[in-house]
Amino acid sequence: ADIPVITIDGPTASGKGTLASGVAQKLGYHLLDSGALYRATALAAQRAGIPADDEARLAALAAALPLHFDEQGVWLDGENVTDALRREEVGALASQISAHPAVRCALTGLQLAFRRLPGLVADGRDMGTVIFPDAPLKVFLTASAATRAERRHKQLISKGFSANIDDLLQDLEARDARDRSRSTAPLKPAEDAMSLDNSALSIEASVQQVLDWWQQRR
Ligand code: C5P
Image (tube, protein in one colour):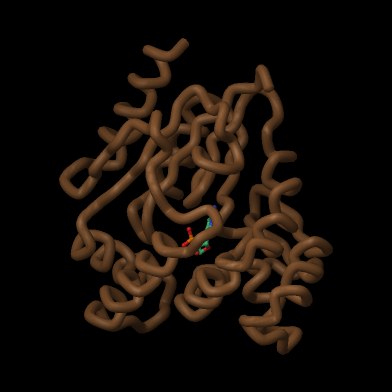
């Protein structure tokens, strides 16, 4: 546990992924996008026709997920699913199945295994509260719902998906409400987390803020 970890938790489309990869790049650390694990489980479940409420089968699926990460993205059973994982319907299903304690438990070991030298930046909902509670720096990232809906909209359009901003806002708020209110590993700041609202911050400024905090911790 001497291997340093920076956790970045926050709601949907708050910019966690962008911030985490920016910080990881600057520090030369490994990167864990924990949402991708829940999304990959959701995609695999959808393909296998496993219903969202079948906790036991979903957990078995998650425990044996043929997942692989490299510079080209995320691979599921030999197929590059990086783009498929970003689809709204996959995110919505991920949010549903991630409420099952057995699914979360099945994905825990995989997440812990990302903690390797020289260090890790991990983003998600429960990185600081559940998975890496001993992390020396925990960030809770927020942005206004309107900002987040706009960002998600841009992201989807740039990938060639169609999207309606009002639907996105609704979906985002529903997903956040579900992530916040579930009994296992709800979305909430760790007690010792630093709060960062990036609604009006550039990516560079957000990355710099985290690096400044990291400097102060070391
Ligand atoms: O962050 P992302 O939108 O990719 O995550 C998709 C869903 O996976 C979230 O809505 C959340 O329900 C779930 N998730 C989680 N715990 C994490 C990361 C994601 O429950 N650490």
